[in-house]
Length: 113
Image 1 (cartoon, rainbow, N blue to C red):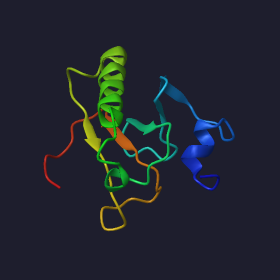
Image 2: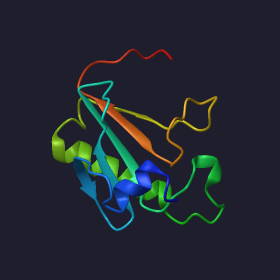
Image 3: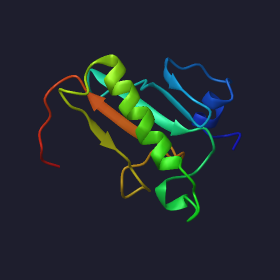
């Protein structure tokens, strides 16, 4: 996926402000944050979105959410709360077609959608 911006970040071709990295997951600050805390968590392997995951996807989603929990606890906002968002496809608002989870926190949010 040489044209995928997130793959380029994983490969070190583009810079990012990392907040977490493991063998399977990379997390970094969003370039255009919508909240005081806005991080993106991506699998290092390219998947277009949740619908692109194979049925035998192993622990991809578990790895992503374990990383989210780790960062929220480490940075001290786990108790106050945060929101996770996954946009899938154009109708779902996806603009970068590499599976990613937005972590949003740092202020009270409206419960409505």
